[in-house]
Image 1 (cartoon, rainbow, N blue to C red):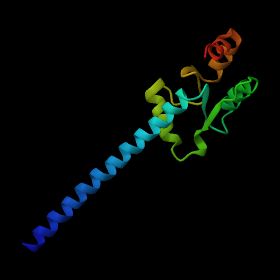
Image 2 (image 1 turned 180 degrees about the vertical axis):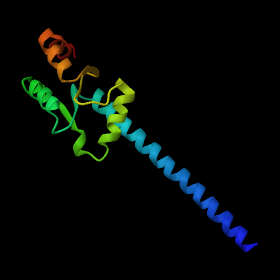
Image 3 (image 1 turned 120 degrees about the vertical axis):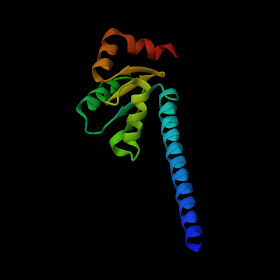
Image 4 (image 1 turned 90 degrees about the vertical axis):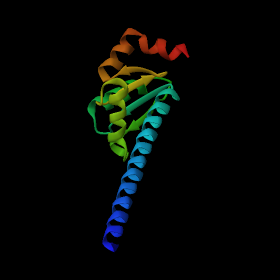
Length: 129
């Protein structure tokens, strides 16, 4: 009888632990999503980047020529960088970097940013707000 009670107690403790850790994981996921949303919509220019990526360096060079300074989130320098990339995948269908947002609008990667500068679209977006 004592063995049965102990077994039930262990099983219940294990189940509660699984639920608790699952809730922590969901909360962490939600906070990463909230961080991404906040970065995109609270800043005029947001770049999700990796510090060593040549395409990211190119995008940052393009943006350095503007009077507006971008907020740059270096994913490789963050513990939650991989999770941020997963949120970007859910949000825009891409997990590659760089990903550039202007006034909450997704511009795209380095080539897309360059094209937006060439066409004048970037300047229009920046002057719109």
